[in-house]
Length: 234
Image 1 (cartoon, rainbow, N blue to C red):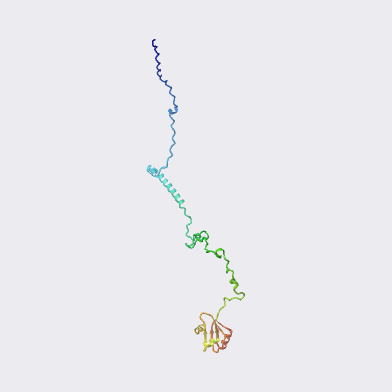
Image 2: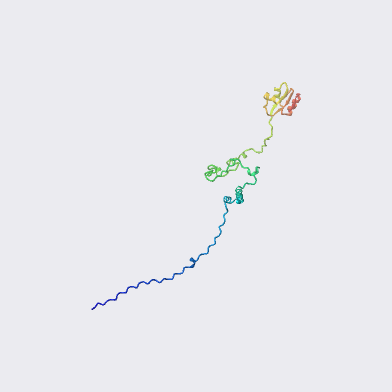
């Protein structure tokens, strides 16, 4: 048998050129020209003093004004910082007084730890005085001094004057010729001590004339001296 011829395989059709897609219209925003943004005018900076001075001679007045303003501001700041008291009078006042250095010391705080009289607080160790106070006049429970002293025995006059005593018999012995008798003469004879009052008493008799001049003379001695022709004065 004659071989049957197979039909030739169909070749794949060539790819048709892709249909050109219509280009998508881009938003007009990108292509359209944006309206020009309105720029704000920049704030003018205050010109420096050096710049104003170099611009024009007409700005010299402005430069002077700026300098004055700066000076006034500096002066105001310095016044605030250095606020001095209004009253500078040299008069000494009570609040100026201060104690002399070293005259005032801090009080010793006892019982606040061993750094300063803390443990026993300056009272020592044990005993009555360390534990509690003892009333004034307490002498341990015995008979007190006020009970031992005598009572109702009068008093001692604090204004009493103690005189050195010289009797008439001593005067007759040391002044046999008579004459003036003073405290200095009695001191020279060794009858009295100096710088102490002297009193003449009437013990004994006298027959010579004596001019006695001492601090005090008893009435009996005075009568005997006058009877012998003498005198008495202070």
